[in-house]
Image 1 (cartoon, one colour):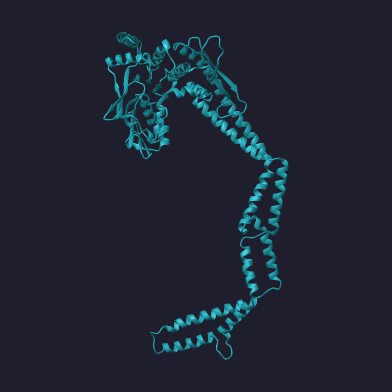
Image 2 (image 1 turned 90 degrees about the vertical axis):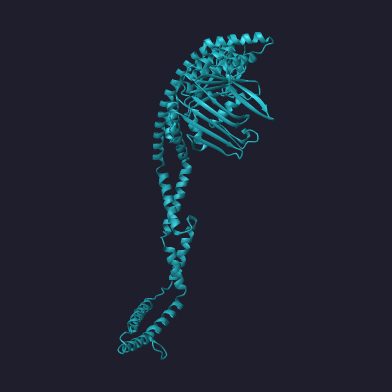
Length: 556
C-alpha cells in the first residue's frame, strides 16, 4: 500500500505532503481544482511519462516521492533479483523532472534507468480511469483481463514459449522448402564451381612464389653477369688486380706480424674473423653461381599458370580466399545433398513442437473456459449490486487453427444491459455509465485475486446517476475492505463512504495559483458533501448530507 506521497512543483501543486492508510480514500473538489493531478503525479512516480511541461511555471525541477509498504511477494522477489532490498518492508520511490528534459529515477535512494525503474514498479498500483473504460472496447484486452482474473499467467507463458518453438521450426522448414528444380540447378552450379577450382588446384603461397620466379627469369642475363662479377672480385681477381680474399690474407699476415711487437694489439683477431667470413661468402657465391640454371620454356609455364590462377579471381582476391570459398561451396553442396534427411528431421521436430503447443494450449483453453463461466456468473452478481440486475454478460470464444503466442482461441466480451436484448460486443451496446459499472464490477472481481495492494479509480462514477451512484460507492467500500482504494469523484454518494476524505482547492496568492490538498474534518466533510449534492435549500441540503454521511458510515 501507499503510505506517503510528496509532490513538489508538479502542475499547480507547489508542495503537497500526504499520508495514507488502508481502506477507501476519496479526493473531491470544484471542477478545475486539480483533482486528477494527485493521480497524475502518482502515475509519474510509478514510471509514467514525464516531461518538462508538467513543471510548475517558473520552476526548474519537480520532485515526486512515495513510500510503499506491505509489498506483495512477487514485488519483493523482483526487487531482490535486481539487487534491491525493501528496508523494513518499505519501498522508497523518487522521480525528478528537470526543465532541461532530464529525468532522474531512484529506488531505495539509488539512481537507476527508467526502463528498470518502471518494471520494478509494476504491480504496486492498479490505476483505473475513463480511458481504461475505452480499453474494454478493444477485444484484445478481454483475453488479458480474463487471464489476470484466472491467475493464468504461468499457463500463458508456457503457451507462448511452446508457440515460439513451433514457429521457429516452421521458419526453418520454409527456408529448406526450395523447389526440387531450384535445388537441382543449384547443385549443378556448385559442382561446376568446385570442379573448376579443383582442376586448377591453387596452393597456398603458390602465386607469390611464381611471381618471384618470373621476376628472376625476366632478369636472368643480368643476374648471371652480376654474380660472376661478385665472385671474380671476391676470389679470382682480374686484369692484374688481386682478389679481395688475397688482400684480406695479406692484411691478416701483416697484423699477425705486428702483434709480435705489440702484444696488446688485438686487430689480427678482428681481421681473422673478417677473412674467414669473406672466404665463406665466396664459397656461397660460387655455389649460387654453379647452381644457376634457367630452364628453357619455364617462363612460358609460369605465365600460363598465373593466367589459370587469375581465372579464379571471381571466387576471391587471394589464393587463401579462393581456397576458403571452395570449402564454403563444398559445405553448401553437402547441405543440399543431405537436405532430404534434414527435412525429415525438421518434420519430426515440427510434430513434437506442435504436440507440445497443443498440450499447453489445450490446458490453457480449458482453464479459460472454466474461468469464463465463473466470470459470467460472478459478474452478473457484481452488476446486480450496481443497478444492472437484469443485464447479461457472456464470454464468447473463437478457435484458431494455427498456433499463436496467445493460445488456441480469441475471446470477446458480450453484454446487454436490457432484458430481451441479446448480448452484443461492448463497443456496440455499452453506454458510458454502463461501461463504468462494468469495469468496476470486473475490478471488484480482480481485487479478490490480484496481489496489487492499491487500486485507484478516477471518476469511475462517470455517466452514472440516481440510486446507482450510491451502489458504486458501496462497491468501492467493499473493495476497500481488503485493499487500499483511492477514488476521485464528483458524487457525494461515493465520497460519503470514504474513511478518509481529501479536499482539493485551487488558491490564488500573490498572483500565483496553487492547488492545496488537505484532509477534511467531519464538519468540513459535511460541508463538502452538501456542496456536491447541490440544491436550492441550504438547510435541506445540509440535512441530506448529514443523513447520507451517517448512512454510509454505518454500512462501510
